[in-house]
Amino acid sequence: MGSSPSPYTGPHSARPAASPLTRFMGGVMHVGHGHSGVDYGCGRVYGHTIVRRGVGANGVGGEGKKSGTRGARSSEQDRPVDHPVEAMAFVKLVKNNAHFKRYQTKRRRRREGKTDYRARKRLITQDKNKFNTPKYRMIVRTSNRYVYCQIAWATLKGDCILAAACSKELPQKYGLPGAVGLKNWTACYATGFLLARRVLKKLKLDELYKGQEEVSGEDYTVKSKNEDNKGKKGKDPEPFRVCLDVGLQTTSTGARIFGALKGALDGGLDIPHSVRRYPCGDQEDYAETVHSYILGKHVADYMEHLEEEDPELYKTHFSKYHEAEVNAENMEEVWESVYEKIREDPGGLIPCVMRYLLRAGGWLVYVDLACVLHGAAAHVKTEKKLPPKKKTKRAKLCASQRQDRIRQKMESFQKAQADA
Image 1: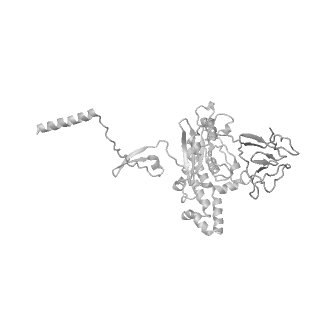
Image 2: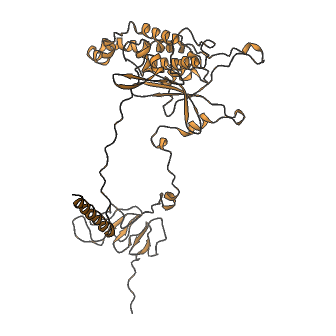
Image 3: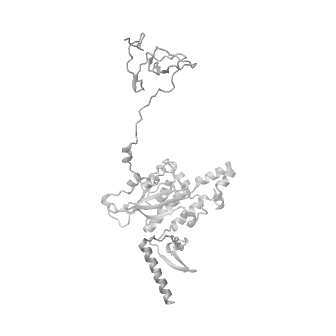
């Protein structure tokens, strides 16, 4: 029997050695080299370029080139294939069954993007030798309208709030004309200042630690009254120390949360800090810039700039300022008066709220004494609406119960007939 002619003929008749080019065709792995044209049944390889058999440039079938040099192109009848023939790369399965079996759901407030548990763990961890001593932190949060500041400490049941302040109180109690600019850097400073004076008054330390009495941009750190005792135990209490809790907010240079930090420092709280994140950073003239931010000069400068560049946009952008009669000229005076009123009476809720039951016009009204003392609206307890009664179907009776029910009706009917 004659043997079939070998496809490997010509000057390069030796079978090509293995190369990185591998293909799976018809269940058989073929290895091709780049020197000769190697026939794999569905095409040829020329220098790692696959050429289909029977598909030419003019649509006429052709055998193609049988030999060639490395990297050489085929004739016009043979064209390179755009994609590898029946080739599939290895894909690594990342999330397999073992991954989903070990998956642990994150905490709810982490999923909602509200709590940074990595930072919280380090803020609330207390030394063992301090036993159950609370570790206070100053929480600063900003919304689209207001600024919120709190003094809190952590317990196993949850966080406890010692004092709180909100920029919403500035126009209501401290003379800010209108609800204007309640979330800018100046409002953050005023809210932090209010919180500091409020918590010190609650702890009866407001007279001992008065803070920065003159509004200034210089860095201020409260000093203990016992420093002159040369190591001896003093009679006066130490300054109230807290740590700043910024949550998930970005701590960039000039951020508003550091305005609340500066206000709390000037109010008399002891907070570990640095001037590096104040407006203008730690430059030599940072105090002037911080002082201008405290008095709202940066807002006044922008008002003047916008009034010259675009008067129409100025009227719409600062419409609430115009209604409250606040402009670039009296901006500093407005905020100075706010700081004075905060120092005079920081206010705050009474820890134990006493409720009195009053009768007014036939209604029972619960009045919070704390709200009355601070001029807030009294809480009126409205009548609770009861939910509508559900219509329930009567339970289905069994045969014996139905027979007994009929018997009782017949007896009652016969008794009524006899009495009549």
